[in-house]
Length: 77
Image (cartoon, rainbow, N blue to C red; front, side, top):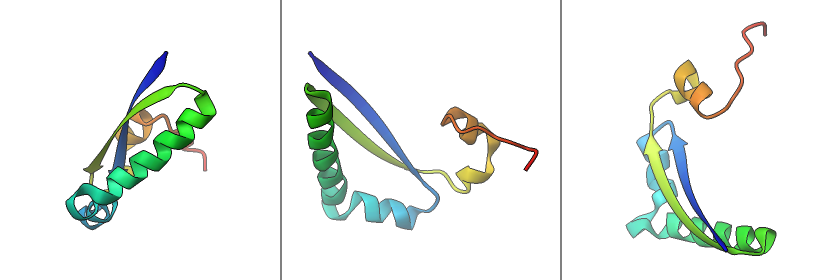
């Protein structure tokens, strides 16, 4: 009667990761807390949420990551 959700936040630069994680992990904790409350309200069930933040330089330019994340690539444009 609950959901276990793991989220990977991918950023381009370490400086962005520092902002998302925050001092002593406080920002990512706040993000997770607020997101969990919203999900529980939407789903009407208990949610266990784990957030991770990873730096992958220029990930938007790498077709492998775009496909793995479920984005479509239209080479006609």
